[in-house]
Amino acid sequence: MTSFSIGATDFLRDGQPHQVISGAIHYFRVHPDQWQDRIHKARLMGLNTIETYVAWNAHEPRRGDWDASGWNDLGRFLDLVHAEGMDAIVRPGPYICAEWHNGGLPVWLTGGERELRSSEPAFLADVSAYLRRVYEIVAPRQIDRGGPVVLVQIENEYGAYGADKAYLEALVAVTREAGITVPLTTVDQPVDQMLADGSLPDLHKTGSFGSRSTERLATLRKHQPNGPLMCSEFWDGWFDWWGGVHHTTDVATAASDLDALLAAGASVNIYMFHGGTNFGLTNGANDKGRYLPLVTSYDYDAPLDEAGEPTSKFFAFREVIARYAPVPEELPAPAAPAPELDVDLSPVGAWTDAAASTLVTDRPQTFDELAHLSALVRYDVELPESAGGLLTVEDVRDLAWVSVDGQPVGTLSRTRHDRALRIPAGRSLSILVEDQGRVNYDHRLGEEKGLIGAIALDGVPLTGWRSTPLDVRPIAAEVGARDGGAPAGESPTAWTAEFTLETDAALFLDTAAWGKGYAFVNGFFLGRYWRNGPQRTLYVPAPVTRAGSNRLVVLELENVLAPRAQFVGALSLGDTEE
Image 1 (cartoon, rainbow, N blue to C red):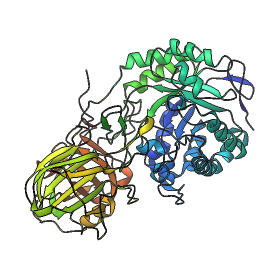
Image 2: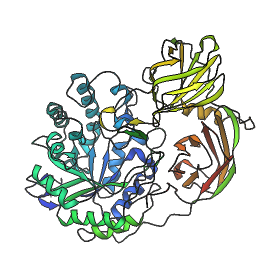
Image 3: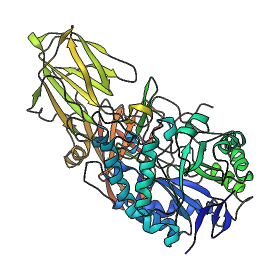
Image 4: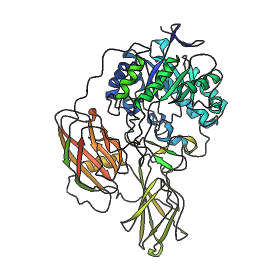
């Protein structure tokens, strides 16, 4: 069997110096039927390794409901990497950041008062059980057992969060006890304090950065005096948030920084090689004083775009890599043109009007108290003496539509720091609240969603709330079966459309004429759309389409400007800063 180890200055493969040239693909962001295509294209760019995080909350959204099949089949993903003749790096967290909701941690884990990412016993017990599950998949696929896995990472940029060495030691112990024998690494930004806090003496330190490679490698070398230098997150692009711009990086500059890394003999993992998509409700959010939920696309301005097609960055990186390693002569085949269609949307009625919960509580229940993992909860309360006045809410997480007696009044937004809204006199108040994505970075992990804290009308607390969870997936399935022709009224309206394809094909659904909501094709949850931008197309993977009739379902929360569904010829991810 092949061996992989850490030498005095290099990684050693069967005792010979080896430069890891890797790229990140997150299996949970790519349709499983497209994994092999993305992995193959990585090899054609000259990569010899594929890296992936493991998203705990994708595998175990509810405690005990473990799933490693379909989209979560990490073993099959690693087997496809191996079949392509490539190595693999696995980063199981438990925290992954990755602009993924809750940083990859399940909501059931992060709720309550427990101390996250620490050696607190209850937290550590859950983490250990999770890691053992992952290592049941990874251990038999290590390189010394005939598989592809050459490195496993402990935690993730932990130095930016904490310095609990007992926690890191416990993670190492469970990893080794589970049969992981390949070298173990950590990653931190090349900042002295982070590199010192985020690792242990017997773990191999690596860096995360996207520029000034020579300088950052020098900082890393101070903290990792022996062994190979590695940038295990070479940021070749960036992520986008609603209301911002589409972020890109200069191709020549990124290629130059990659060249500097490889010329220095350093190993590298390009983050991302292929970003993929935050399908469904999986996007994360950042909050450094202002809450910014992330968009559905995770294109990342990567060498392979969201639809899996090579960009100019692919070819620039390929040219750089060819100076240091063999690159196949084969090039990716050009994609077939995406079908362009324009079809009518038909309204099929209201979709947020479920009967209110029979449970009445003094204050609204949070998403977490309701164990609700979908996007929306509706809160209803009777107004005392049909009063109106100034409605104040201590905290809204994250966006709320307010109505009185069924008539829209306005919105409250966490991003805008809204706390108050004047409402007219009426008998009943309804507040529809959307979880726009859980924070994936720093100490806001695990925060509750919904209406938080005191709610008052002209200073008088409102009590007697009914909290009704709305699960958009089954709602979409139900409204998708309705016949069209219902009026598009004041309430959020569902829309459907039928369209025909000659064969299954990747599509780009233009949402610019819609307001805000969720879209589904043939029951597959594409994700969120929002006129707030920058993203204006939703990517439809070819495997979710079919020859013949296809069905689109749109759950609109606000207003459709034009009742049309347009499928356009290419991605449209928004204006850039240039």
